[in-house]
Image (tube, rainbow, N blue to C red; front, top):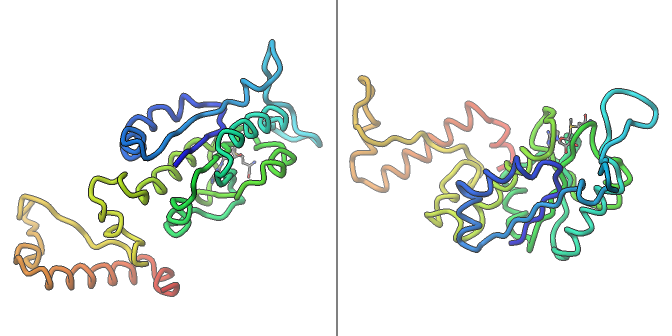
Length: 226
Ligand code: SAM
């Protein structure tokens, strides 16, 4: 999969692209990521990318021209990609959407800054609008990191254990069961005995019960969608 990111702060993304799931995906050749900075598409010598909002109010707005020029360059390099604009007004990202996006040939991620992107550039870009939650970030870059991590772990060959994403929360519409490792007793807390029994059917049943109980207690809304 090819992923292009339109961002004024590629430096924020570089460490993320070198480590963890994203770093592994790139190193394995499963994913290629490129950043496009609207500042490189702004007029010299000052390369200004923001201006005051029409109608007044606080903050600055990311200008349409350099943003769209960067976006169009990315779209030319990745013509079959699904365009995405990060915004608090978008569809909230969840596991189902992450799995859908993992099926795409490519993604183009437009990260806003300041008060946001001039709406005319948003319209011309034509992206799917995605939020990562009901709070406001200073820019779309943290949203890009969250989306990349959530999407890439669903691409075969990215996770070390091909099945592990299928054992995580939401894979079957439930939260995950609690997990334990050595030592068998930690600060007077023993591991649930079934996990030491070697009885795989009993372990599977226990994990399912725990997942159902956890979901009913913490996220009953998930059970309604099952
Ligand atoms: N004025 C905008 C509003 O209230 O909807 C917020 C702008 S925010 C300070 C700057 C940029 O951060 C946005 O254009 C968007 O790209 C990104 N952003 C902020 N919150 C986000 C969220 N919850 N999900 C995804 N992106 C977000």
